[in-house]
Image (cartoon, rainbow, N blue to C red):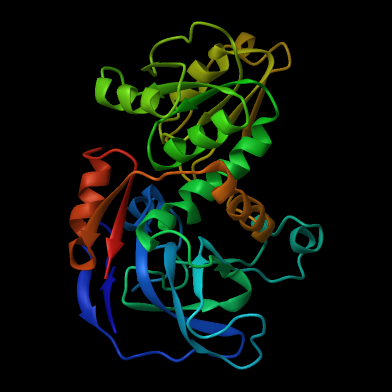
Length: 327
C-alpha cells in the first residue's frame, strides 16, 4: 500500500510505500476510493490538537470498499462500500459511552489523528464505526458527508429548531448544512470573510436568503448561529446577531482564543455551546436522509500524491466546497 504520511508536525506529508496490513479481530480493511480533506487535518499537521500519534496517516472522510474482514465481524461483507468517519473507536464502558454520549468518550481513537486514516490506498478501521453506504452516488461526492456533513448535522440539532439560522464560515460543512436547513424550511444567513463576494455568491446559489461579511449584522435577528470558522473573534459577533434566547454553536474542533466581550451580549438567555465529534447514531440518522434531501456536494479532486497541495489550497480558500483525494 501507499500513503501520505505525516512524520513531523509543521512539515509536509511524505509519499510512502508501506507493507500491506491485515485487519485484526473486529476490524475491516478498506480499499480507499476517495478521502475528503478537512480543516481538522490542518489542525493535526499544524500541531493545534494535542498529542497526535506520529508518524500518522491523516484523513477521516473515507469512502471505499471492504477487501478483508477480521475475526468476529458481522453484518458486513467483502466488496461492500462503507464510510469511515472521524470517530474511530470508543471504550464503551466510561460514563459517557454508557449514557449514550460516546462522542465524549474518555478513551476514544480518531481516524487520521490517533490512528491511521484515509490518505492512503487502503486503511484499517474498527468495523463498528463503519457506515454502509450502498451503491448510489460517487465516492468523491460522498466523502465530505463523513465529517463536514456529520458535524454540521450534529451542530444543527444542538442549534435547536429555530427558523432563522446563521452560518459563519461557508466552507465544506456549511455548504452541506445550508442544503439540509433549506430542506427543513429554515432561512439561511451566510457569513463569509469580509469582501469574499465569490463565497457569498456560492452561498446564495445554495439557497441562502442573505449573504455578507462576518463583520456585518444580518437584516434580522437570528434564532441561532453556527460558527464553522476557526476565529474566536466571531463569537461576540454571533452573539450580537442572535435574538433574545438565541443560541450560538461553536462547531470546530479548534478555535483561536475568544476575546473578552460585554456580558450584555450573553444576557437575555442567549446561549453559547460547543459541539464535539459525533456519535454513530448521528451518522445513521444523517446518511439515511441524504438521498431524500438530495444533497449535492461541491468537490475539487486531487490525486492522493497531491495531498499537500490540497491542504495548502484549503488553507488559502482557493476552492468552494470540499477537496477530495483520489488514490
